[in-house]
Amino acid sequence: MLIAVLGLSTLGTLALFFVAAVSTSRRRSRPYVLLTVAIGLLVLRSVVGLGTVLGAVPMVAHHLIEHGFDFLIALLVLSAIYSVAQPSVPD
Image (tube, rainbow, N blue to C red; front, side):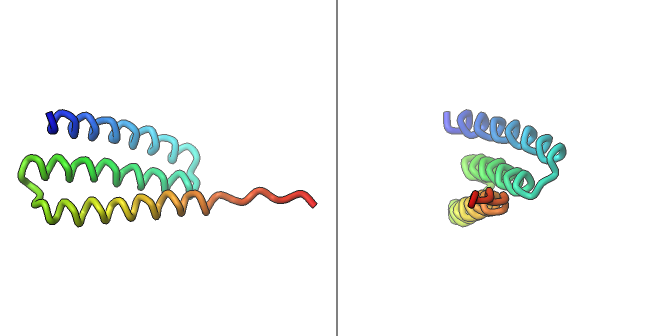
């Protein structure tokens, strides 16, 4: 059951990554690039989870990689938010 859930999660995040990549190629702005990279890390996070369940990734490496990705994803999302121009305040 766990393999099925991780497989579906990987496919779902991969589909989302392709949508984000197409959007990034159309918009070509920094926030889109940052969010696309963050979604790409979500895909890799799912792949690491599958690798752990299948015995290819040791549990210690799994935790280090996934928590490292969590930090990077949060950093990229916050960077995307802060890179959007602030609206001007009327006088």
